[in-house]
Image (cartoon, rainbow, N blue to C red; front, side, top):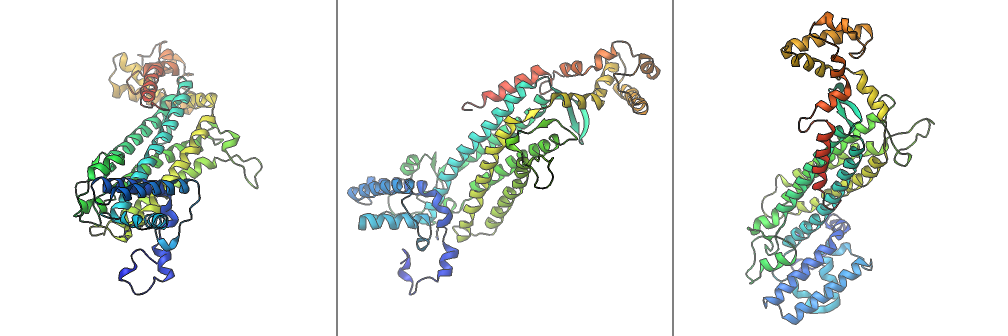
Length: 458
Ligand code: ARG
């Protein structure tokens, strides 16, 4: 029999139970549901709303149920719909009438909001740790490649000199912002809706500050209707995760390109690549491809959640039960991706010879060559035109800026001298880019140190 069966004359149809029940996925919040109930019962006892002795029995029995859940001894039932009613039924089975007092001054509406906030808060902490671990891996590899010159690209065309360290620290920067977004979301989430009741609070003299404190929230929420109908924190987390996945997806795309024969910039460890069932020679970057693919799945959850919420009048509507599978899967997906991406990245070999060859072939020192003329007094636009002519001559003659003779340089501008070769040497170009944020090894070293300082536990 349902907890709420009083005003009904029939049992629900089994088909209704199937669609209505959320226990198959919300049971993962048992820890939060039970600790939330323990705090609620403690407060009810402290305020004299239920007898202290009964509050004590409830808390003790809930503690035992929690232990049994952790030990895998509990089987939840679809008949009891969701985690909230399953726990309440278990409690009443164990301690009888005292258990029936637990739901005083509370609704499943504020209960589910508390549970979900506490659950996602814990997941945000886990996610942040995983992101920090990836950032640390990026910093470690960058430190080994401060002088591994490679082209920086625009339009996927070789552009200007960078290093593997400079290039990949761009991803550390993106992931650092992702950490900030997760932290922001956690701050806004951390207000306790318990006490909002079904929608309009309660007449019992409850102590909302007490339960908020006991459950690790900064304070109670300000409006009971908002308390039970707000799912912004779910949307914010899904947005932060979508942006994070977009970053992982771009990084994956680079790794897919870099591990191709055409680029050959990196070699994936055999443990993080896969073969083909027909082509014996293949070594495929499936992990990076899956991360790229799963990005679509996380975006899909964000869209789904936004759409579920967009037309809902205040306050709670059952539509909101749909939030859980979406956000749980988004969190799980991102965690799984980070768990594999980080060791894939750590074990990947960087082929510095290939980076260097790509750097040597693409006229990536052309800007530096123009700057050489500017330093000798020529306006930048004129210098730009001269070097454009040189590049044109190189392409026509199968040469590079390094292999042009001084006569060939002088034919374009008499300002050129012997020292041009030193000026366009890739190491000179690299060491000269000392602008903050630039690829000069000292600048990147400073960025790595600054980034590491943000990672206390990694
Ligand atoms: N299982 C529900 C959910 O996840 C809990 C809240 C149910 N509230 C209600 N009034 N039916 O949203």
